Length: 336
Image (cartoon, rainbow, N blue to C red; front, top):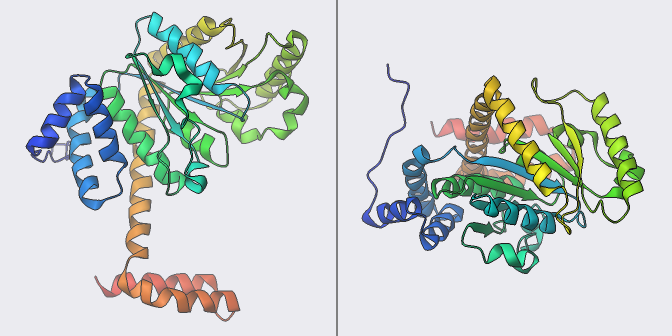
């Protein structure tokens, strides 16, 4: 039996033109394809699924890097300096955002491209703000799919940025090859405030603005190296490293990218990268299944009719949450 079970649906002329435009690296087609992917309309989602299926064979070659850091850590300056360095070396760069705050405020950490003014004007770079609205999971889903579109359009480096709130680091780490935690020199004084789980995710810890206070930078580097030494690495073939640099002056940017390339080569040679991406793809599949089942449950006629009454019983203490869940789930069985 053939393990390839994906069905290739015949694309409409308009969508075939969109796919051809993305593969031809046309900026307009790329933007339109990502807008289609981000749409919440059912008919658009069906079209997006077909477009992504057509683009899928052209994806997977890019280096995927996640970057997280608290506000003020200098992420925009760092990404711009890195992006210009990569372009000078012949790379094409896409920058995407996973921003939990956008689900509340409608804003985005990359909403103002003027913070990357030089990079945003370069044809070799593509900067896409986080889609606002919906849950963090929804934002992440769209960002994953936008990443595939960018790879199909020939971008060989994809950076996924997050502001570092809630579960966003875990979400981003689950879609990239290397996860980078950006910190300030004074972070060494307050290492206890940085959640252990976040540090455990990091393949590289980068202390930015090293030019401002070299002594504090060295102290922070030492503190993070000690902390990482006590934690179990998520990789069998890579030990997380701590780097210092200045995005403002550009010092250390080339060294940072050398470490990313070394990380990539190490994981590729051991087969770990391929395994990691396979696990990420499966996790993504189950995330989408969970999201769709939840969506269908919430829109089920019987559930909608009974939900308010059951919710009142739970809050009043006359029904246990378990009993309420079973009662609502039984509505799904009634239609099967």
